[in-house]
Length: 386
Image (cartoon, rainbow, N blue to C red; front, side):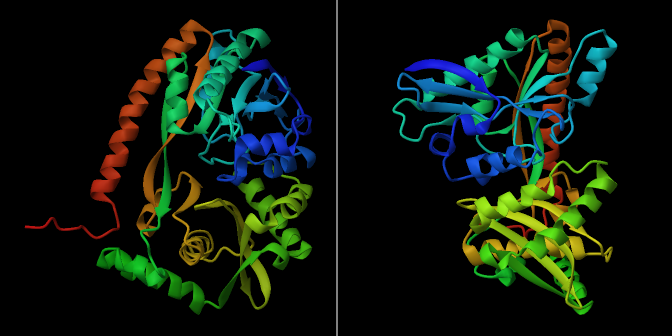
């Protein structure tokens, strides 16, 4: 088994071949191409409060057989699993909550693997357990109060719970492709009122003079990225006050992941007025950033949700994962799914308080999901056979 487990502050120390041997190809957000673009563009560094600190497990030959994408955080921005109240309570009691350790995809609430294991390793379970043990040792070793693993797989969160982490649940809204051949097939699965509403929304946008292009690969030009970056900066400034992704990041994304990147661009009078950035996994379309200079009602729904469904159906993808929050997605065919995270808290007092909070929160999350599915689903009720 391993010769050493260590942390590195530069993804290039590991290298693309070894990283992607562990990350696989299913989810582009944990790929070397995506995360190295973050680092090389200065989007993730100590100055932005996202210092890379990846955990690496090497075998006796010095080859990586396990990796955890990890960051030292100076704040809780860009995470989407909110712990601001935990930090405030701990610091009010005299503790020091920051810096903390965070395993995540920076600035993106993308569910996916966090315990990355070499695809040819004969005993992946042992590798995961060693990675978890390595994570568990870090807070005490570094004098930090907490470590968080967010939007991980359910089975990973359960393994970490067995090792003393606290599990947390959340809700996102994903669209599921039930072997639809076209958008009308999807509409046919909805109840009559919702079906009419979606048709009306799409018609309103098209009647207003918008046209849409799904730009991918070499169809994406620098002027498209310039325009999209302008949208991104505007949206970030209005919502969060800070744009973490630099313009260079989008150049590197195009260079390294152009064939897995789709920019849905909305044009009016030949001017690009809105766009939504998507990445394509093996069976999922991941909708990420969006922005516009046009405040026309319904343009957001068409650009981000309906165009994404069109792409998924055309390419035979199983899921559209449209990011965090957004109960308005339900009426547009996106269904609630449970997300998972795991949290290691060193201080016994804070741990007890957070554990109690999470027990209550988890009950509410499960009830909310069941209620949404039972009372607010836009899909037709399937009658049981006699």
